[in-house]
Amino acid sequence: MSAGSVTGRTTVVECDALVVGSGAGGSVAALELARAGRSVTVLEEGPRVDTAELAAASPADSMRRLYRNAGATAVFGTPTIAYGEARAVGGTTVVNGGLMWEPSATVLDRWAAWSGYGSYRAPVVGPHFAQVRRRLGMIVQEHGEGNEDSRLLARAADSLGWRWQHPQRVVQGCEHRNQCATGCPSGAKQSMAVTYLPQAEALGARISPGVRVERITHRGGVVRGVQATGPDGRRVRYRPRTLFVAAGPIGTPVLLRRSGIHARTAGRRLALHLNLRTIARFPRVVDALRGTMFTAQVQEHSALGMLVMPSNLTPGGLGAALAGRDPRLVNELLAARAHLGMFTTQVRMQGAAGIAGVVGGTPLLRHGMTGADHHALRLAFRRTARLLFAAGAVELLPPTSAAGPLRTDADVDAYCAAVRPGDWELVSVHGMASCPIALPERGGVCDELGRPHGFTNLHLCDASVLPGAPGISPQGTIMSFAHEIVGRHLEST
Image (cartoon, rainbow, N blue to C red):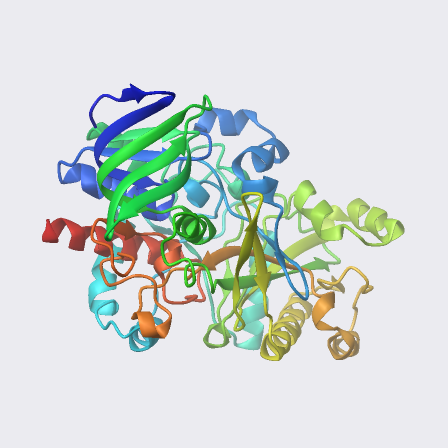
């Protein structure tokens, strides 16, 4: 990157490769471009926070600082879905569980058939996943001290003959501090903030936090500039030879729309994983505060897009899950906290969400949950209830604030018969496929090099390019696709 010049009140910066966003995809671009000897600048809207700062901050403070809209982004529809994503150097890898699952050959084949592009299949994606796994030191996270909620779930699955697995995580020396979702206070989680990005910096990459990118200027399918506002409020104009955009499944399509790039198709569809939260009370002490976020995931129904796992029970998380309930019940449950476990059931949404518009610079997100989704949520809750009762739970609090505790299978049947689509209390932390790699006539925004159709020096390399929802935590899939996109770019230049 050359030194910037000042024109009026705008600083102009010439650069070779510019990366917008520093999460799973942007960090791959930064490191691989730097490894190839390119001069790289990474722009990140959020702050840079080190491990010492995470350890000193309360989970509530970290939530407010590291999450976009303090974790309160809404996807409107019936019901409204609470969507969470990070806004920090390292992106959502700073606040996720460090889960690393390989996309199945079945999913990749389905995506390839739909997209019209046949090359992102297991023989191509698999070696990239293996490389990411080695670089980040993926382990199988077995039960540690604590994690009694995971042990109960695993024993219940065994009693039912259901398939479960210890999670695959990118951690080194996990101290089981149970703060994965607000930033690892020990540095054990191998987020992009402690791995790929420092490695890219060691090779000369420059990371600029607190920079908001406003618009991409272009002509004839060639990016001419990137307009941004720095942390001091001053305007900066970057002139990159090549631009990689990895601003996330919402940020990337919003930036494209503001820039007049595929404004009709970018963000028109957004795939989501939905999370149901169920609180279970056990007759024995569970002490779910102790341990990492979970050490068992029930995958018996993964073919239906359903996974069941414990949540990292924290006072704040429990309070959020109990919001809107009768104060007497809340007081009773808080007093019995040592006997409680909170469990997440992830369901792959079949209906589409999307960006309906942008109001005052803020994207308006809407979804169209279908009758099939409602059926899937009821089925998922029934399976979860059966599992938790088998684990010894004596009472379940379903993900509907108006519903009372459920103590028998008959209670569960009555709840599922009565619950309406608008009653569900849903959370999502996985958005994907808002600018998918696919032929234009199939709704695609990007070609096989991650380039928006018609562009030559603009690439997308984040969750937005995935053709759909993989049904697993997507970080490994995102990084594998990003490695392929950047590798193809380097081979062609």
